[in-house]
Image (cartoon, rainbow, N blue to C red; front, side, top):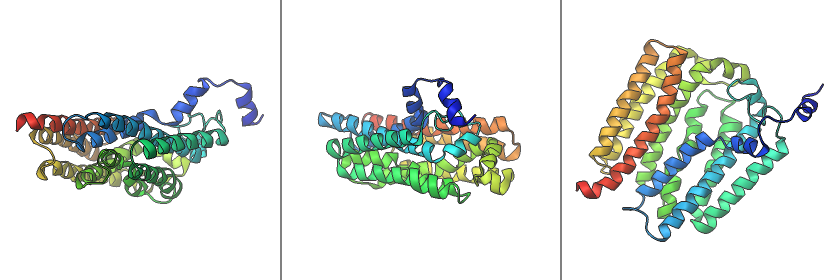
Length: 306
């Protein structure tokens, strides 16, 4: 019996709307949108006023929609790869519960809706930057880099680092050096974050035929790269304070979070286990979230602290 016949005979476990929703990779997109909102908040002094609230809400919704579209397109392109990996085999595209045409239409509608929202309610610059991010992730990274080079996540990480730039552009209508500094932080955060995941999913990636760093260069080399990147990242996270973009509140948070991440990386390098790699991966998410939250708190406390 063919897979298409089987999928037609057995009803999907999840409602159709939930299958489409899961294609947008909600947890990943939430972190993307959070970083974009931080970029919006840092771009203006104090709390948003009047029409700024409308711009912020429209930009948040538009970026959310386009990011979801990119995630859905990624699921479409990697349908066969996802079916071979335990981590992704549950996706509706991998199981054949959603067709390629359905997924493509869904992705296209989300991208069109988000782009229109950004063009008419925010500004054209934000729309074009967001669309470029879509192309960078969905096409350049997913189609070209990911199956081609073990440095895929390093090069492709540039698109994933764009959310603060998008947020800044939404509120300012330009791309300032502060936004690029936030982009640099996420760019340097991405490799140790993703390689920690790849370390305990090496068999999955090898089975799927993807040249992830642990597959091509082994665990020892990858763990050393994680350690080196966390220290480089730690140095970069101090730059907002050193350039006068943030104050002592942020600096304290950056030091605590950075040293903790470096400690995880050190332990991972010296005494590897899948459990520790998983903990390192999960902490990396908290690291970025709390780091940007510290930027936000510092931003609003600065007038009170002088």
